Length: 433
Image (cartoon, rainbow, N blue to C red; front, side, top):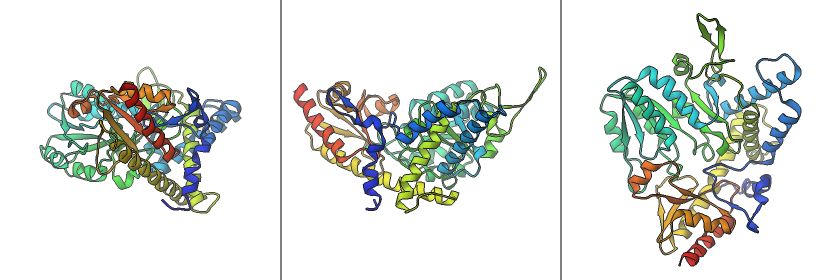
């Protein structure tokens, strides 16, 4: 990490009011960022301003408040386009979450294009939200699901993946960019290239990648890419589906309603252009504006590194985001390495998921201690981790586990948070000794 930006990143904790909370009389140590991130003050301020000064519906009214809300909403979509480096804002579909984005592709693209005998490739690492929608479509279309295996360290077996693509029947590959349970970063760009060589379409679940990596959908050549925005310092109830325009234009609407139509009669309805075709009804206006504020917050972090106070062009805004994510990755990587090294020295504790390329997630189990007991005892010390199967039951089965404890980092976490976790685990051993 650049020494110029490091102090700002390390002081970012001050931007997140909830991190000043006490739990059971002890300072909160929040290590459940893979479930949801905390929100910085600028995002909270943007939400309050919307409700207090702007609240109105969008794309429909001619009055001042409606025009203001529409402008802020559309500006947020442009910020999302920039975050993903999509070629056009019409390729940015706003949803209520990553799960809805995957379901949209499964039902709209999948039901239109899949047929009996076609194959859908999913990986063992997938979250349930990138398994269940495809099972539903497979039942509806007669397509078959095939599973890309993983190694014991939690990495995809790329040789097996390439061999599976050779069947000549693969129509879609659905793969997670970063595993929410293990932190494994998959080689998405290479996997997309291989899939395209056999004519397959690729959907990337970017729910866990969004907080850690600067995404470039054009460089990846992704067909579809989803984001879970409450993990990127934005409110809950907001997600993004990126799709190549040529694919989205050929797909039927996922749902029907107002604002996604061009004309309606009882005989026939015609649909609006992208992105409106996939956005029926009143959206989560405040949440989308909050997402725009979260992106601007990250951009401002990067601008400090670039020694600028504002970004006047898209190129400079993208450069600022790149600088911010460079610092974020460096901070989170250092915390992940520190936690892995210190936890691995504790007798009876075993790290789960030791891929060479990882994001800020450390999962582990302990002898004679159920993960839920670990989580409960840590909570008594004000330390928030996640315990369970992490919506990855097939992955847990492959690893021979029922559950793990998971600590997940954001850039506002510190070495002191890691040390508190390690001390907490020592107390778990004492309590359950």
